[in-house]
Amino acid sequence: METVDILPKLLECLTLRKEIIVIPALRTIGNIVTIGNDAYKNVIISAGGLSRLGDVLRYYLCVDEKDIVKEAFWAIFKMVDNTDRIQSVINADLLPLLIEGSQFVSMFLIFYSRVYTRKYTSHKLVLNILIKNISLYIL
Image (cartoon, one colour):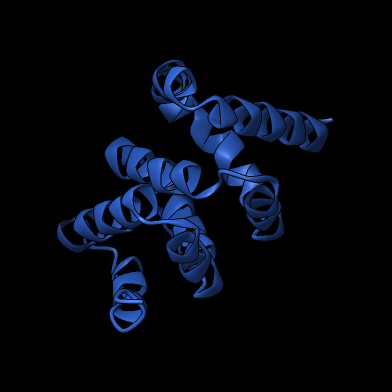
């Protein structure tokens, strides 16, 4: 797989706290999980991608950087297209961050669910499962 050699560097870029580096790294990860197949998504998850995305959310939620939070949400949601990957999000302890960040991205999520659930019916299932898991976490 072509991304394996550059993936550690790409994920390291997410830790640098410099928007000029973090944003392109987030978009690259988002593009990989959007265009790539399941193997690409699994490689990113196995390499600690969800943990690094969690670190991005933790930091940028505190400094109120909405654009970076939206990019991180996009990458996470594009990665979780089946129940195993949803479980990976739960295992990476991202649900509290997703709940906290939802204030910044609620309109984004509405757009995402409307556009992509029309195109991909499996995304509707994924969103329903994620919402169910979030509500269980809150209760």
